[in-house]
Amino acid sequence: MAREVFNGRLISVRVDDQGHELVAHPPAVVMVAQEQSGKVWLVRSRRPVPERTLVEVPAGLVDPGETPAQAARRELREECGLEAERWEELGSAYSSPGFCDERIHVYLATGLSHVGGEEPAGAIEERFTAGVEEALRLCSANLQSLAALLLASRHLTQGGSTGHPG
Image (cartoon, rainbow, N blue to C red):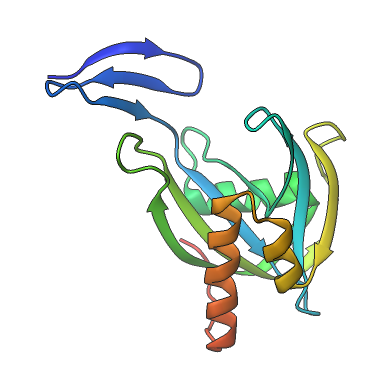
């Protein structure tokens, strides 16, 4: 039986019978939002770890009572002021399965329209587009962004079809 040793706003930590420290973390979403031109949307944000600014694809946590698909739509609107006609979940995986239950859902969003509603400046320092190769270079410090871009680029080069998320 595991015992809880910490319960915070975002995470909780418990220790199991074997002494493993296990982190409970909400699921997350990352989106590769691709314009018709082939460019993808990126955001520049200051992150507490690694205490610097990173370039990333839009991403965020799934709120309580929300599905990953709903979170993806909300986060894309909040971070970039965009909505997408077509969504496809490209996959999902645990971020650190050795100790954390956070599962990250990766989406491809196409058929974009600019609707506004972005979060005010602060959390997001800059929103911009770049080609996929440039995006891979710019996102090199963020594994989730790299994985999302690689999945999306592989999917697009194979001529995958898109659908709507559940």
